[in-house]
Image 1 (cartoon, rainbow, N blue to C red):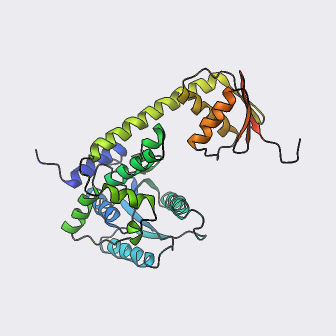
Image 2: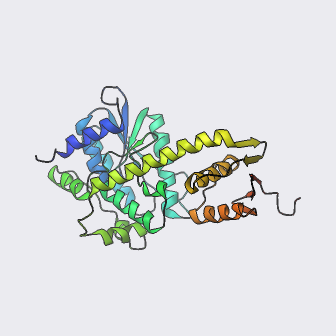
Image 3: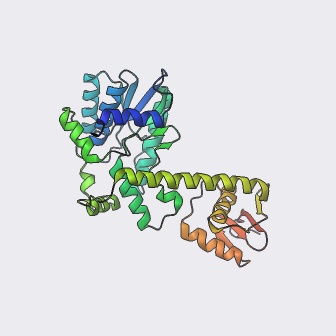
Length: 315
């Protein structure tokens, strides 16, 4: 049997990721950078749900070409009667550029979607992105959550192209005369993702759909662990003012790791701890020692206790 056309695959993916959207009057926001991935996403969304989409392009102002790219998307949308907005950060992007730009992009998209009553925001992450993400995280020693890759659904963010190869999206643009731009940073080997992409070129033994099946299975395993941790935390974690106690620590390693993070994040929700830091913390607590994770003082023993560390020089 011939493979179903890309538009049909896209329609079926939307049915799974955004159930009920097809029969509703809701709007879908489409994040469009101007590259072939997002332009194909925009054209597919218009083909499947014409009149019920609007588009937004985030221009971080990091490259001189970005304004022209956003203008190209504006012109395409105007020609196809798709509402379109160009979103710009209120402050310059600084620090870790990729991370800060990603944070700013999703914040701007969420604000825009809320203002335009978009129930969903579709992004153009595709199968090659998924493979690259999973392998990059594997190389960094990621656990279950990291190896689950790019989530197909994350809140109101949906990614309906995760089982599509980038080459297919480029071919779709070429076949339908859809304009697109080339981001020169995609060839910059200073970025880990570009180096991974280069390493994967020509390695056709990796199957996108199989990788997504693995990512989905890992995500389900992570969700099951979270469910178990929530149940155990209700039984064995207590909080009084600025102190949290874990009364039972007799758990398998992964459950204990998640319970530790649960306790710490009750006191410092913004704290993000690396795997090796958590491993060292657990070892210290199991030895009955005191240690720090972020600004949280942790005390081991039969019962684990957590509280904010006193200010330096304080008692």
